[in-house]
Image (cartoon, rainbow, N blue to C red; front, side, top):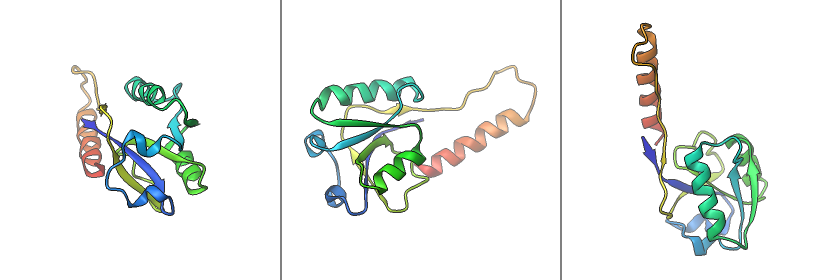
Length: 133
């Protein structure tokens, strides 16, 4: 599965009224990103591209969606994260972020696995993931 990126802001942030966020909209913001040592490689590459495109921004790193939500709710900055990161959306606004980057995620298991619960579990995760997006 593939998902785009959202700009996530607190409910009182001036960007909350926008329908779409572009690089110029956030060029003077504190931007919360996922810790590059913990995030998937594809997301890390997107974050590096973002940092190169916004050299004057201050970047803050979060180890999880939960800590990023706390930072945003405390007005420490805005976050750029995959659009499916919406579990902690209360008090936060997700706005599509226009950048040429999609993040791919999936569930994989060994084809010769003899435990029938594994494919069933993978299908269940996929269905839950689709509902989140």
